Length: 301
Image 1 (cartoon, rainbow, N blue to C red):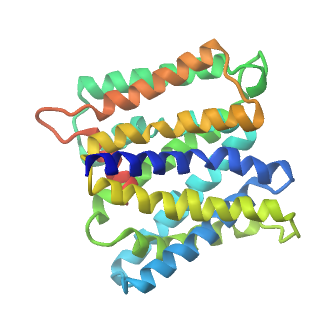
Image 2: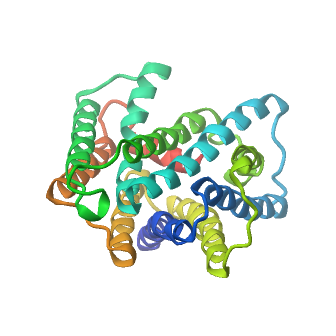
């Protein structure tokens, strides 16, 4: 049972790791980044909608619709859009690393919104994360922005993707257990798609571009979440969250393999510091809920 859980979570991490490198296939052909995000949302929504219909879990309370719409705007359009913009501006490897600043944002927002204690463990994670971001900015390597460092847009969009990713936890804090993921995405994704619609050019793109964006919707959105949730049923949340940190490793490897993206020494050191911050955040605490559970809740929302 445990081995099956590990394999499912690892599979989900690999599928999420495809997002940046596969997005670059469409970007390289000239598709605008927000259009890539739109087609990922639209294609992913078709699978979630079909699943919700087949399981007959399509209803949500009317009073919840404004909050679900806000999540669609910020958590769907915001995350998917900012992430692919970060890929375009700084490369797939850099974008995937900055995405994992999410636990630091979760710690900050949990303190501000829920009054959760800022423990020494969380402070250490914040220091590691912010220090890692600084090192990544200083030493990206020639293929990731040149010797002068990463451009500000790459950092801005990368941090924005981490912030909007953290919103999954905040949203899940209120709606976890009330609705299934297909039900929530059935209603939230159309809002995200509408927000991204103005960026769509409706040009006739080559077949491999359509294949790339369809793969993002099916593999890296619907299938990745489905496999991750099934893995959570077989594995502790802490262990699942740790295995899921393979995502930026997979993304960096594929970015190197497909696009020859490489960090410099400081960039690799910064990436390691950010991942160390994630692992520190996930470490179970004796007297309070673990941040690992928070991260799992973010995925499960």
